[in-house]
Length: 341
Image 1 (cartoon, rainbow, N blue to C red):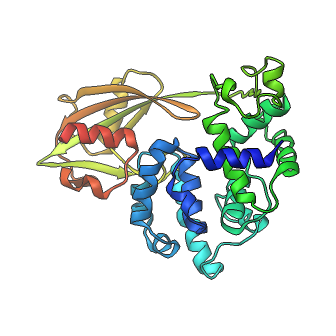
Image 2 (tube, rainbow, N blue to C red; image 1 turned 180 degrees about the horizontal axis):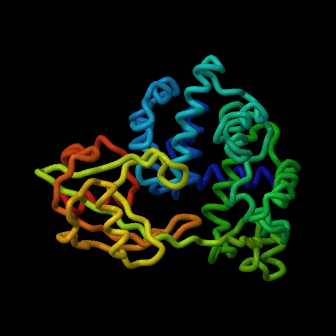
Image 3 (cartoon, helix red, strand yellow; image 1 turned 180 degrees about the vertical axis):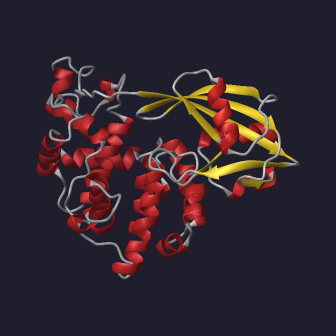
């Protein structure tokens, strides 16, 4: 591969993104974790919001978890936000507030995997280590005609080995950015504009008519269906919320009182158990006001929202104006926003 040709393409076509204007490992780290959750267009707003709230490693470490989760609201995979918070405190307490400057050292930090470690190491510290994300694997797969399964962790090493042979030793960070940008902007997942590709003559996929067949991605994933019934228990201008503390989705976020059932219908006995749990006298005036399906990576959530105008001495009530103080799963946050506004 002609590395100089790739870098020239990047200089002419690179998007103007805020995290590309810094070598601060903290800012690079935050941007990379956010971009694992969303596309670049949406990620810019989340990045600015998060950095405005926590402009430095010390500010993030000093925050409480609820503040961090609230800033992360809407991105999903809240374990990544918790890992950001944990690692910030770890770096302050055990690393003198500084990131390790090498790939292996970065890998030891919680929540930082091979790609993120390579990105920080090359972008912030100039280490010669390739950053292999989906865009890079797609580009390499087509260019070299690789039919290795990119969904297999054991086969990703093939792509890393290829990248190690061609990475620019003088500017590995710029090279990694160029590889990712070329995959994102030119060698796109579907309908790439091969007619304008600078590597058209060298690309094996193009020359053999396999552009649409590469990369190979075979991923077997079981999707679990769940039926969730959330209740807006409203009493004298306040409503009941609770904090999720068990393992699984949305840990340490707040939610409305919940019944989870095995089927879409709420059975009488299940409703009675719910009323006993929250010390409610009656559920006769409960009214279903919204139903939707919410997709997660491994789960399909069938959600019903109910309203129940009744009072109880059990639990923690807040006023609608205080919603912004608490981190909710985005599906509940949107429901509350629509209901009260």
